[in-house]
Amino acid sequence: MQNPAPSLSPSEKRTLQKVSEGEFQVAELDWVALQRLKALALVQDRSTAVVITLEGSRVLQALTAKP
Image (cartoon, rainbow, N blue to C red; front, side, top):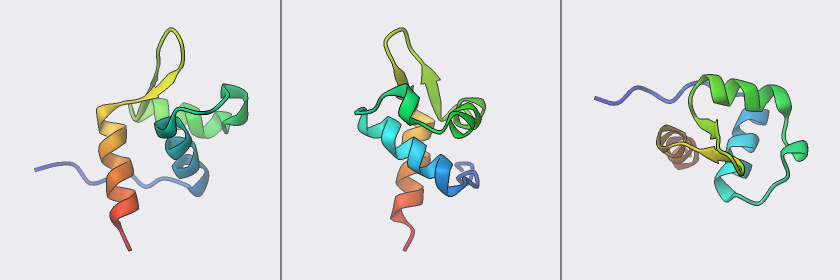
């Protein structure tokens, strides 16, 4: 059984969505939201960019599937 999606603030949801789309400048992102997403292992730093993790993709899909 999968863990339920964590409760994310509107800013964290927007930041996760932007990272998933891959078209952003890090300076455009909410720094505090980005730090929390990293702590939740929903995004991670790579040598060239911040990227969404598999868990982040699962959470984003769950969040966007809700009515």
